[in-house]
Length: 319
Image 1 (cartoon, one colour):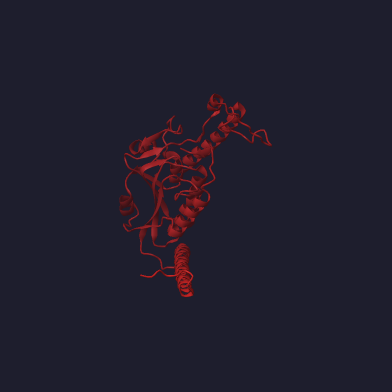
Image 2 (tube, one colour):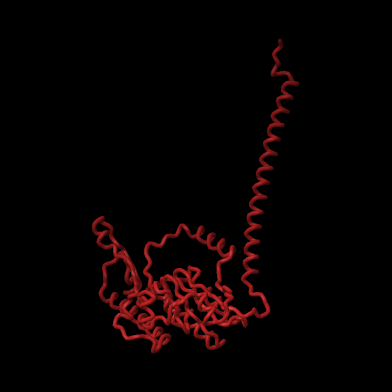
């Protein structure tokens, strides 16, 4: 048995070659791994780009021949707000498509919403009034589980408001909500240091003591919005409204009560109105929904902005 001499040139060269082979294999393996990752991310971005292009194509209205006679449907579901699907842009785009289709005999708004932004609701309400006058088509608001506050603000633009006997209808009022933390701050020894360039710039700040003057101003503002809401309801419902001291108090009623008070016209459903009133049983849904590209954009935006936290926000809604 012989022992290899490490000083032997042949042994040294063989060892060197073995090391070089190991380094070469490791380098090639690393290159292949990096190449696979580059290919993976290229495919990911290719899919994102393809979805954006597809969403853009889908969003572009296509020219088509007038549809056969049908009832046009636009859904109003969930909170009415700029960041929800029931926002003014989506609803108005759907309404315009429905009214402009020569095959649509009438438009039905199927509503299931607790309310939301008075601004968004006002925009949709005014657009319905404009489109009705322009296209001479009737509009029906069919209320399901809930048609309250800003949702009812939209509903009164319709020629008829149709409800189920158990629907919740009304809530004609305005609120501004928030919190106050001054008592908690006193207990834990936290001092609020707020600097403003105007005496009312920090108005209704939840970490500052209540200011009666500022609260009076805010109350006057929401009272004015309430009067705007009342005026819209009276204009839309007219003489159908029955005298009731609680009508504009913010209370809500079931569908049967709503009909007796003049807040709604009759009991019914989507299919019934399409069949018996519109005389067009075929229903085509014009509701605008988010496509894949929009959902991806929102998710990317949310991920980018996830580090920014808003501690407190005063909100105004009609509920």
